[in-house]
Image (cartoon, rainbow, N blue to C red; front, side, top):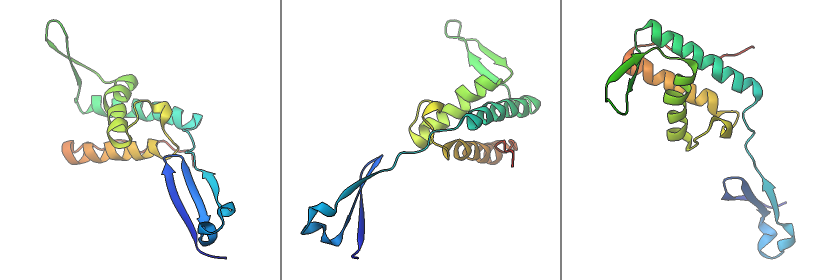
Length: 136
């Protein structure tokens, strides 16, 4: 058998053919390579992790600042699971993987995003965030 060549067509499709393809196009086939979507356990882990991050940030007195859109008054409030997810996790997901929704993540991205956020907090604030939840 000759050399196998893979050519990426788009995000989810790869063309595969051998060296005889040039003379015999019957050897060509399409291989669909879809990412596995985030699992229910990972979705639950995301919420647990965001809650744990909120606790750490609140304990470090690193509160969430919100500017009132009308009065322009800055209001300091404690972090919650939802505020961590909306104001820390999702913007990082959008920047690193160009995805706006956590529902669009594959199985690798949640731990990838949490590691990037943890590194950033450690480097810039000296705050150690929790590891991604695991039941190994």
